[in-house]
Image (cartoon, rainbow, N blue to C red; front, side, top):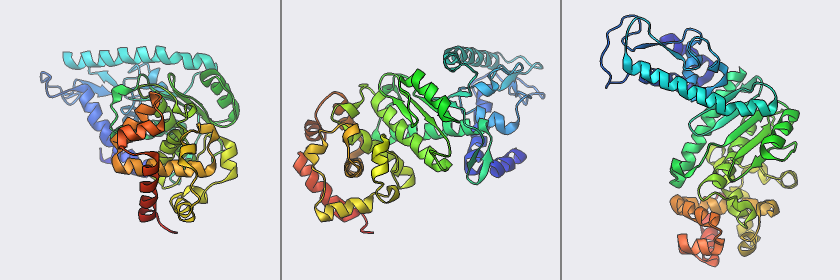
Length: 391
């Protein structure tokens, strides 16, 4: 354990150390629980199962954090479970759990095979608790170290799970409100991305492509030409995955083409800002190339707009689809979500539900915050002046 801890710190910092702890707990739990009949066995440490010898300690650690990983799914020794039944003892409870896990892996392998078939080659695919991740990225430089492709895939699965947890915790959303797992696809080159976008999102483009609503999918090429470093790509994935979650949360509907562009973009920007304190992703390249609002740090520019009396008309904003938002409207949309989330994030979630039920923003504001558009603008302006920095 000590050597495993040291190696985790050396290659991955806090995230890898956390993975080790999770692995130890998950591994032991998968082998034996306190309710099992105790079986003494010196060969397996009384657990009824042993870690598969084909996988190194840290590799097995990250595997415990996902439900399926194509990198070990074909292991002849463990079948992708990571653990094997101890041949020296008979522990029925552990054997049943391992058999169930193997059966689950078999079902997931069959369900995910369609991805390989569509692309024409075996993909690096992970299934976590709430996502399916296709990660064909090569070696990445992350936190000043080179990270191998297999670990990169697990890192993105963990990042997406953190986003999902934040989304549900902050907005008061239950896991049961999502019908299926979003698919996030990260490609090493534009050609593979365009092929995948056409097959899975029914649209081909050099930039990231989303399929919103019933079958949520995001495909993007993680090239240096598009993303200079890991942080930029990570932030882009957070922004666009937020769009997927919002559109797929019941009742399922993309509000971005239902005059809910302010909430659609505002929430995606807000989750970017939650981690990095900046928003630099726009869903349409023509917007991004026009204006960047100080590299994505929007609170100071928004305050200046308010002070100068140049706030875009909110009644007009609340009639816009996502594709029609100006750069200023993007920034104000973020700030409105910032204000409403700070006031009551669970009420904000109810407002978003009402928008997906095709209620107008005007009516949803009245129903969930007891505010008219004019009252919202007055309160929001005062809040911006009181809380946003001047420089």
